[in-house]
Length: 144
Image 1 (cartoon, helix red, strand yellow):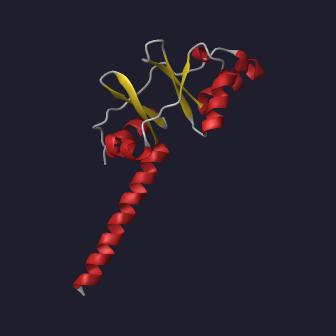
Image 2: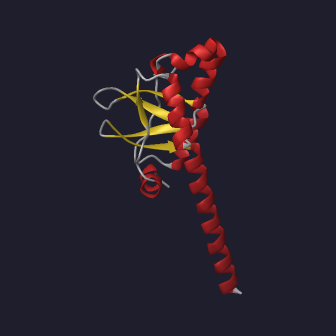
């Protein structure tokens, strides 16, 4: 299963933020949209970083409550791993496992085109396994 298939079902909407936004503002977006990461974009819409729940927890551990007033540029991950529409779920799982990340922005022609989470991959993988199981049951029942 490819990234484009997953995005075709789940949609391409990505919640973004700006580097100058506060950590508090990004935390509110995470809570409001019930997501685990926000892509930080620059004025041209290019990816400048990504901030996850983990980044916020690390900031809290290091700076305490005052971290909430800090600009998100100070806590975001700047080296963002991305994927392409043609990448397979196996490639995504390997990338996420190797780099210990749970969210991959999708880039198409240099533009942000979606977001894939580990939850998306698990959901689609389970659905594929269930489909295969039903097909096997149907095959066995018809062969008997």
